[in-house]
Amino acid sequence: MSEEVDQSKRRFLVGMTAATGAVGAAAIAVPFVKSMLPSARAQAAGASVEYDISKLQPGELITVKWRKKPVWILKRTDQNLADLASLEAKLTDSTSDGSKQPDYAKNEHRSRAENKNLLVMVGICTHLGCSPKHFPDLAPAGFEEGWVGGFYCPCHGSTFDLAGRVYKGAPAPSNLEIPKFKFLNETTILVGDDSEGTA
Ligand code: FES
Image (cartoon, rainbow, N blue to C red; front, top):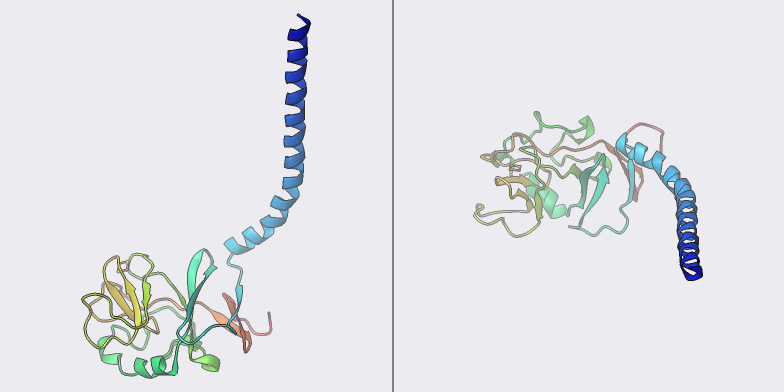
């Protein structure tokens, strides 16, 4: 009998300890969750993303997340830029008249004049939303000769050049989207914000 009492007392004490631990953990967790909320909200609202491009090598592409979308930052080589000029006849919208980009990126390179080599682009296919892959050298299987680097969407075979301009015959109706962005200085860019005088 006394052993039974002791057992139930022990279970009670163990239960209390676990409950106290859980309450303590919850009490600790709340401030963390609270402190994370504004940034989550800001992200959802489209907060801009800062990125240091000083370590980016020629030809290197990195992906950052902006408004839950992948945004590519690609440091194109001078040869890449020279190649763009030779592609016009092969493209659906070489002048980007029917494509989405800020005015300052509506040019052959689809970049800002301060740094033409840097491409900042939303990595989502304008056909049905798949994510194209970067093919800097080798042509995607079955693609024509003379590939000078670009992007290939495996879902239905759309191909884009290194300015995100879609090749003729692809199902994607327009070029890949260029988001608004600006340079905060020579080595830092801000994706999602191109307003004057803010950082
Ligand atoms: S979603 Fe890219 S080609 Fe269809």
